[in-house]
Length: 400
Image 1 (cartoon, helix red, strand yellow):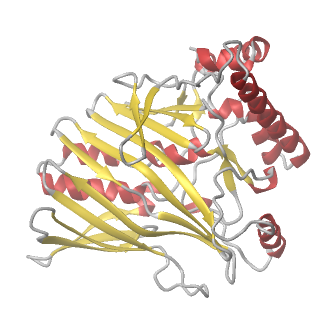
Image 2 (cartoon, helix red, strand yellow):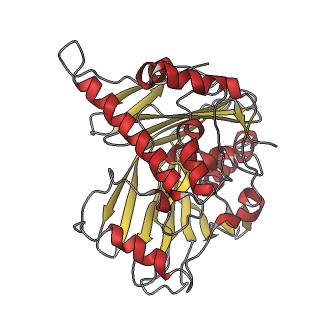
């Protein structure tokens, strides 16, 4: 199965080579074990990171900033966005669907939402996806598909379906990183919906912000508020993610506090407390009973790396194919090779853009996503609706 739009823009010879035997490199998923804190042996990395922002004004939008391969992890942003959905030890979406009453299902959704937060490494970032790039992976009966539907601004659409559990995910999100002198703060805008079709329930959720602190103590934290709401049941949750203090003291590092309440009356039902990289509990305010709803070690420790089950089924637009040569250079520590491979990808995209802008019709040729219908809503945000009702099984799978 080949993405025809990508074929038409990449050139027949290049696509033919990929179709015969795609060169694919899949890196291990981000997990608790994958974290590497900055220590006294890493001053050069800190200086290199700071050098990137030398000529950038505070308050600047960093959306279009391109990093050299020395600062990249061997995977695309599409993979990093979707890994929390398909790289898990326990099927928490199954738990959300199989809980018997609305309150239990809501608390399970809260736990699942927390599980999508993963540790990140200071000084390293994934590749910015190219326009039309896709990522298609299956874990058991859950099939996940992403597409980069816009490049400026960078907008990613995700659609996932599980026929067995009758669960569906719809995400349309776009990060907006800004530089503030001593830090980079990224707000993840857009809509994230989880649908439990067996119960007729849709859960709307947001995302905390990603904070990269440069000085005095470098580090990466998830901070700020996250809201989860189900209109059908009238339940709502507010979560507050805490990071390290300015001087690097542990304090509320990776803490999470919050509450579950009724939207209409604001009546408090549960208090939420814990750390998203350890355990999170809810306390029933009426009975005083405390229950562990999330254990990070049980959910995101020891994750398995996806594998290619069907090489011929890979699309040329697949992230693992697009960035494969760059990945090989990074993993083999041949940064010269990685730099040249990345440069070739970026130049190809510039050629495609120039060709589109000077099309034979005499006007700008609008690029159309292959798997989503994209529109701008009245608030100025992006909406992404999947063209197909269900996501098909993928050539890349996660071993169970």
